Length: 443
Image (cartoon, rainbow, N blue to C red):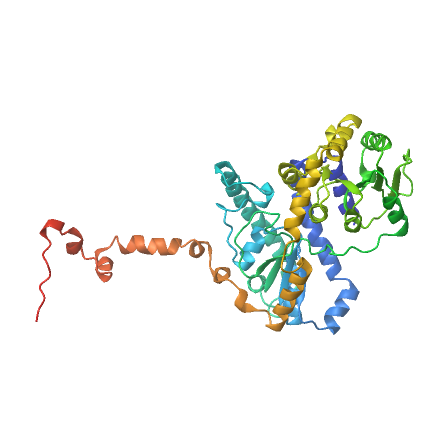
């Protein structure tokens, strides 16, 4: 969709601006919903809906939750998988506690402690997210009603309360520990293979022959390197031309003007498999969660240039942990970029820190993929596994926070007849201790 490309290009031009990202938030929601709806109405997919049957629907969730109605259409359980960590929409669908006092909001990244200001920010972000999801939920419901009309299908609210399980792209070893109900399972690193695939021969030979190691440059799949302003691209290439290391550069057009001799370009590169190579010394990245996770897993330090969404938070966390140097695109010059690259190359602490994180991240009883396979099959075996569901899914705000119970006790102890029902009559409550007599025991 052209509109998608234009918005992404605008984000690239305003790199690092969280305000710029949220100013287009409504556009992002509408684009995601339209894209999902367009795919839904493709004849190839409609044919699948008419002719096929399934044991399970797994929904990749990103402002497209209306398609959970497919579970009712195919009469099978529905699971969700989200490319980030736990959000309020996942909490609401599973009854998972928000834990605003003990777990930082994902906008804040990983923190060392929940001090007062962190708890204030988490409280505010949590409230903002609840309001945001009310708006998103309203928009998604309209698409649900259109595609899964009543009375043929269950209501949107009913489907939301019958999600079997959620996979989230997080793990306590590299994130902040938080309470999770059984229906929320962490599979951070699910896309990473323990044993990397062989690299394409040209790339393999390029990395193997790098006597001083390799710098890997990639801005991911949404932000193209070709979006970079010319002066920023010139600064990056001049820096690379002066390095003794070789450089793998993900460049999406046919040629790179003024390409240095030590630089190899490819339109697409197997990112995780490259990061797994022992000769890769630095990863220059935009800070998307996929690349951040791969860098943690393979123990490669980062020079980060964030553009939008969670990239600023991801890189800020990596910087606090001591395995990344972060710079804004506006501040990127040959001098600043060269200094950042050399800092990570020459200071072994960055590599040491991220290798320690890698050790923690890999230490699990099962790989992330094995975990996901087990729970997917579990849900199928147990016909949706309704026993995993928390009772909180069916409670409203007042019930979840025991406000109705508090109100009951407040009323109960305010009115004498109710106090008496609880064995607390006015007379007994007002008797002075000094006048109490020992009970008389009758024969």
